[in-house]
Image 1 (cartoon, rainbow, N blue to C red):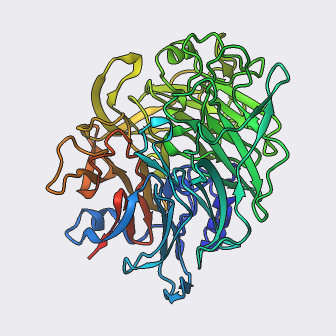
Image 2 (tube, rainbow, N blue to C red; image 1 turned 135 degrees about the horizontal axis):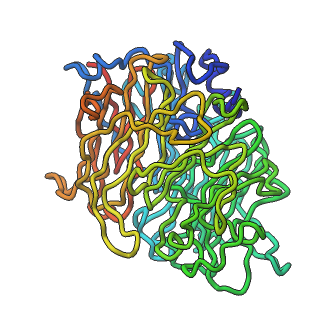
Length: 561
C-alpha cells in the first residue's frame, strides 16, 4: 500500500481519518479536516475526501455563495492553510473554529478566524524585495512567494520570507508558533554550496534564486526548491533543493543542485512548478525541473551534471538523484522555453496492479500540454534514447502552468487535469480552449494499450491573457458527492475598482455528452492592475463546509448561508 507519510499522516491522525484504503475503497467520514500543506497532502493530490457539508446538491443550491471578504495588505501567491480545533490564537479565544493562515508578497503572515473573518493576529517578517532582477512574473514586490507548511503536533508554521536586509536580498526560514506567529527558534538565513562537475564550488545566491515551490515537511525535515527570476540571469541561477531539520532549522549536511555543468554560461534547470510543492512518498522526494540551455546540448541526466526538463526522485538526505524521467522531446522543450517543470508532480495514492506486480503511479504535465502517467517506482529515465521502461501512458491536456488533482468516485480512480488557454511556447502566442478534464485510471494497469480514458471535460474557461492551465482541488464524502473546484485566471476586462475579476467554479464528476455538470460559478476575487504579468496560480481550499480563495489583497470565504 502506498502511504503518504509526513504532513499528510499527521493531518489524518489529527483528524481521525484512516489511511489504509485502496483506490477502490477510499476512507469515509472524518470529524474535522485541517489542510496543512500545498494541495492538501505530501502526494499533492488536492483531495479532501471527508467533506460532508458541501455536497453536490448543497453547492448547486441557492444557499451556497460568498459569506465574507477579508482585506489583506498585498497580493497572495500562496495557498491558504487551515487548522481545525484551536482554542486560542493571538490571545483571542476562537472556540475550535477553523483558523486560516495566509502569507502575502509583503512578507505578512495572517491568522484569520474562518467562522468570522476576523484577523486574530498578523506579523511582518521584514521588508520585501522590490523588483528582483526586474522580473515581474509574481508582481513588483516579492516576499513570501512559496506556500508554507504546518506541523500540527508542534503547532509550527514554516515559511520562507524574502527580505531586504541592509540592501541585500536575503532568504530566511522561519518556524512560527501558530498561536502567536512568533519565532519558536531563531530564523535561519539560507545559504548553501555545492561542487560542480569540475570540482569548483558554487555558492547559493539569494539575489538570483526564487523560492516559489511550496515547502515540504517530511520525516522531521523541511525541504524547499529554488528557481530563477524570469531566467534573466541564467549564468548564475540553478535549481536547488535544500533541507533543514525541522525543530532546529539546522541545514541538512547535503543538498541537491540540478545543474552542475561548467563552461556553458547558461544553466538553470530550475524548480518552480508554478508554486506546486515538492512531493514525497514513504521513501523519496520528487520535483520537476524546467529548461536549461536552449541548444539542448547541455542536458546530461545520465552523467548526473544537468537534470533539465525532468521529473527527479531524490533521497531524503539529498545526497543523490535516485531516478528520473525526461520526455523524449526535451530538445524541443529546451529550444522553446517549454518547461516540463511549469507543472508539479502528483503521486497517486493506492497500489495499482500491472502484470502481477504492484506499481505506484505519478502524474506530471508542463507547458507543452503532455500529461505523463508514470510508474513512480521505475520512472524510466527517457531523454535522448527511448524510455525503458516507457511511461505508463500520456495524454494531451493543453498548456499547463498547473498541477493535477485526484479522487476516487463513481468511476473509480480519477485524475483531474487542466490545460489550454494562452501560451507562448515556441516563442509564438497560442490560444486554445482552457478546460478541466477527468481521466479514469483502471485499478489494474494493462501491459499494452492506453490507460488514461477521458471521462469528461468542462466547457471552455478561457478568457485570460495569463498562461494556460489552472489549479484544481476536489472535495467528496468518500466516493460520493464529488465536487471539482477551480479558480480561473483573471479576465481581460477590469471591474469598477480597476481589478481583473477571477471566478470560482464547482463541477460535479457527472458528465452529460462528455461535458461536466457545472454546479456553481461566482466571483472569487480579483487580480491587481499592476500584477497581470504575475500568474494567479490560485488553489481553492475546501475544509469543513467552507471554501477559501486568496487573491489580490483579499481572502474570500464561501459556504452555505
